[in-house]
Image (cartoon, rainbow, N blue to C red):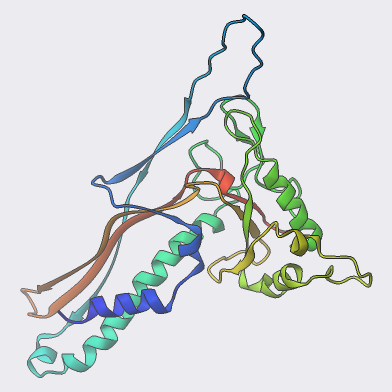
Length: 290
């Protein structure tokens, strides 16, 4: 065992990232795809008159989506000569560290791609819309939005509006959802503004001594800075909706070694099979900034 596994474990511990906290991990499955089935619940309960018949409702399937599982790999080559001359003992730790770094970095980038492609780019979700859209269709008819009607830069007012937007999310059955906001997620360029808004007891940037309502009410637990976010103006608010941002693992880290028959070099490779995706858009609200 050439120590690659130990380096991977080390990187996972040292470089804990925001993405791991935002994504729900699904256990490995035995197929080359992940099937996402979204259900529409029942509508509002009806009043029953005396002697009147009971009205019935049903749980319907809103969508059924298959997501292909992707494979990511990194390999290194140790020459026959370096092994025979025992030079590989010095080279292997360096190779192992770089392979581990590549795999950990790539996985976090793939998580961030979901948010980086949330606005009118990248793939669509189970309802045919991008992650952040003003027109998510509902099973009961009509639409619901998880994107600011007018994109706005991060500020106290715009963050309050985003919380109100999340409070108004509609479920597939047309009822208002019961989700609560959790985190403000920002790129590194907005971390100081996020800190001023979230951590002060008084309103930021004002001469008055008004209270900071966001801080006092605790509508948002905390803010997170994710350096993988590419849009310097875009920001998001997450909710406690289940299975929104999802990490599906088909196969964990797998190490393989073989000898190249043409060069007699030793080839060490590590691969993973997984897919980052989003199921329920109600797990997040966002804006690209003004």
